[in-house]
Image (cartoon, rainbow, N blue to C red; front, side):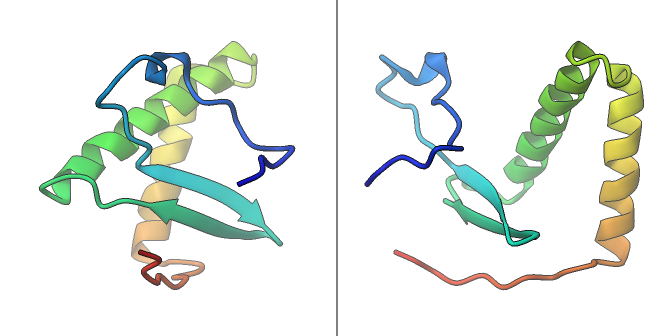
Length: 98
């Protein structure tokens, strides 16, 4: 499969690890979200941990870029997460591609 010009690099910690596995990939396509994922874990609750960890990484990125502090970014992420959780702007669809 060819690489896309806007594809992110594989994180360096993946190389040389026998147990590394990609579990989620997200793209914005025509102003919508297009994802592929593996359920990967024994419990859906583990995804909660993963999503919070991702939010923290993103918040640190905004702080590094000088946009806002990590704390401010996390507050904004959580506020929008809660708003979207209670009133989704787009439920999307999910289909198996196994």
